Length: 123
Image 1 (cartoon, rainbow, N blue to C red):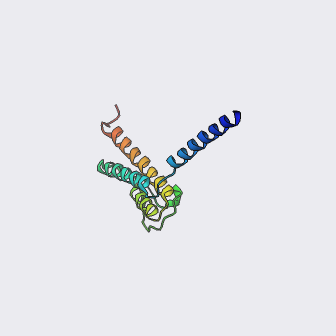
Image 2 (image 1 turned 90 degrees about the vertical axis):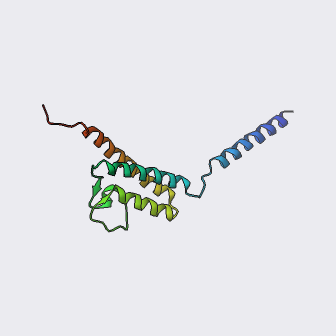
Image 3 (image 1 turned 120 degrees about the horizontal axis):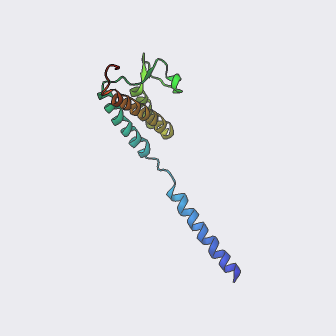
């Protein structure tokens, strides 16, 4: 009697473990990185439209990014180029990391533009 209950319990636990493993297996279609890059592009375009400069550095390594791009100023838009390249090469983790960095930088530019909207002389 006790063995039957134990076997049923183990069978149920095994079924739940299998279902959980199947549900959490990431897909290899790159949809997560593609949607993150798409969101980042929209935010960067919105940030550019404010007229505020995008964040930029003279060397991408200042942000911990290794790139093949040869540009004088490596800015937020260049990060998206590297994110797309990483996604194309199948490195979704790096693509998402770079796209999230671009999103955070664009959000900072948007916040700065919002704060400066009603700026005036000091009284």
